[in-house]
Image (cartoon, rainbow, N blue to C red; front, side, top):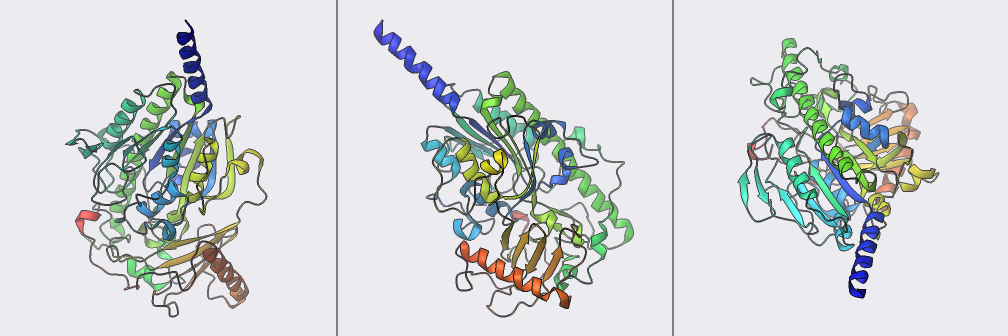
Length: 491
């Protein structure tokens, strides 16, 4: 009897220990603007299930990516590092196999780990990555319908159906196989709402009656850098092909706004399916009694410009490009739920925060900070300023090199040429408190010279703190905005 009693005792102890360590369900969207969700103020997109997570948890009102591009941003979420430190500075570079991430730490701590969906670090690599017990992804961007998947390195096959539904099915199938004595960490990487925006048929016409004009800022570019006007007629401008929603381009005629409207409708439609997916995942957690022992993260990897300043896509340091939604539901962070955090939180903060919530060892030498104290009791020492950087891409030659600083009140953006000489593009300065839409560039106002000098000094200080000095901050040469469309294989 003794051995059986001992085994039972050990099993109960193991189950209790697992229950004390929360699961992690990380729902990651691609190119999701916060204002395309109901809980962030959308007037047209109804997302009741995502909104419910916000009502039961913490909604971060001012979350930003440190490089507004898929692969660098995803690597920052995993590692807690800026792009120049983890090395994934473009959409073609692998996350280093030897570099630690918060899922790999959890795996070493006994968690079952899995990734389902768009990973997008290493454009042509869909093989399993270190640190995950289960890894199902695809090459490149994937397709909204009938994507070919690599099933944990064992088989490649096309699974018929809509991407958002399929990736949710796969995640639930794996979750149902997990044992109660082992905590788990699972990623659901949606393609949505990344271009080319293709809603499910049931949502194809949801927004047909909603008029969507070009934003007013698209027509007020006289005080902005000249490259913004040059970008208007390109792949990333409002008069360009609009991710194939406009068939004949460039087109700056007034009636061509209909193509822009259709593009935005398609974008919104894909988000409705993400809300459906969120409902299914949450329902399963509730049905299995795991909801309150699961840290449920809903997040976007980077923002998206939808006509602001005449631009589409991301990459720039303007607010729509930087801002991302972040919602976390767990009693460990907010026992009462329904909390809004106004401070500036960054992609690099996710890794340290989640590891602290899981009681796991921290990653060493990272740039991010855990926001657990900030949320639970307030943190007077929390950041009031941070810096952003992006490097010119020859594959997408529509955005210069960017180095910018954003404080609680101000934003200063400069565009270094990449040769060590003086900047050749006009800088931008915005007083965000009075001008959150960045409509008035104050950079040429003589009265702003002291403020610009102050922000330049702070930008340099913040960069040096992460290892970026004038000597180490290597960037490509800015070859200017070009008209050619990007290679169809990498769009």
